[in-house]
Amino acid sequence: MKVIALLPEGSVSHEAVLNLFGDEPVQLLHCKQISDVFLATANGRSQYSVIPIENTIEGSVSLHMDWLVHQVDIPMQVEWVYPSIQNLIGNKEEFMSGSDSNKLDYSKVRKVLSHPVAMAQCTKFLSAHMPQAELEHVASTSEAVKLVKERPGEGWTAIGTALGAKTHGLDILADKVTDHDNNFTRFVLIGQEPIKLSKNYPTQDKTSILVTLPEDFPGALHQVLSAFAWRKLNLSRIESRPTKKRLGNYYFYMDVLSSLESVLLQSAIGEIEALGCHVRILGSYPSYSIMNHKLEVRK
Image (cartoon, rainbow, N blue to C red):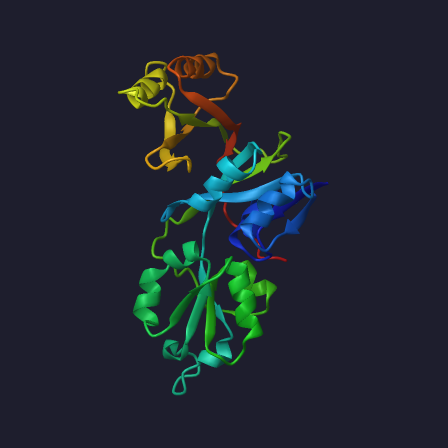
């Protein structure tokens, strides 16, 4: 049985890993902070960790990317995409309208708690329905729901998942409150050993690399990109991030739609290194296209 570390019970990560593994026997190790998720695998408490690294609305999760690059050396083994369906969660009885027992009175909401990324995905809903509410960021959506459960009668609500509401015995006051319908999160499973899923999901080979350019080399990035272009290797993502060594010094994170076993990709990396660039492989893995995102909400 594989031990999988992830964010707390009821988080989007929890829903996503249930969706990925289905009925496969896995043991879930829930951690309070994302740093604990990384360290669980780094220290051997788990075989794999579930890391959200990109969102349709908010883009890259920079903190998580920096952990992958600077804090741990654990390769990516699987990638998959899951919809981030956020809901307004609380105790329904607290927010009922006095004149209409079937209608909610959002003016009674004093505070909304959630993870900052989830909160940012719901700004239009929050501004339209509860501009008076204080917005407070916490470590995860599931922690937000837990805190609301612990403070009944104070007008607190949370932005979180349906699984989080069920886990903590609260009500969904409003479902699908995100600003956009196409709100998806990209997850990676990191670990030291490759993993193969029993479900026959469509896949795409992908390799993630970091490229650090030599100093004082005009046109270096152009030459790096040319090494992929003339070999017809498709880059699905390129992003610059600071190396944290000196102001104005960056590395480039790149996703290449190819397996590292490809002769073309190996020769491209060789050409880039010949330019004086440093190349680090973050992982070569299957990217799963999970077409059916329906998930039975269960603990």
